[in-house]
Length: 123
Image (tube, rainbow, N blue to C red; front, side, top):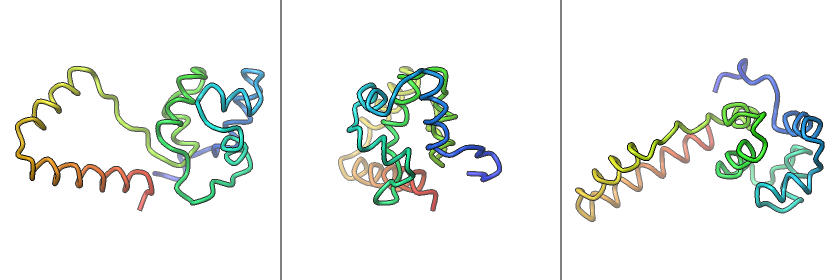
């Protein structure tokens, strides 16, 4: 991800979100299904293992507070947003997957996990 494109970090975005929606960390946590301590760690830039926020929780944050887009939330977390997946695309992918042998499915899953990990860590 281009560092110049990242104008605010997650803590700054959460501060804006709290001001925009008039919510506290506990309410954010409740709406996205995490412990308040998790949101507190994001606010204080203490993400623990260095993995950063779970992508599902980042997406949930954007969905719960729609004035902030998925792209904005992911960028603030230092990650690229996953591409959209329409129901038609999902069905096409599943159809292709179903045509693979069991060994090919395992290999494909391993490749997808590796690419996902690369996207998550940025390395």
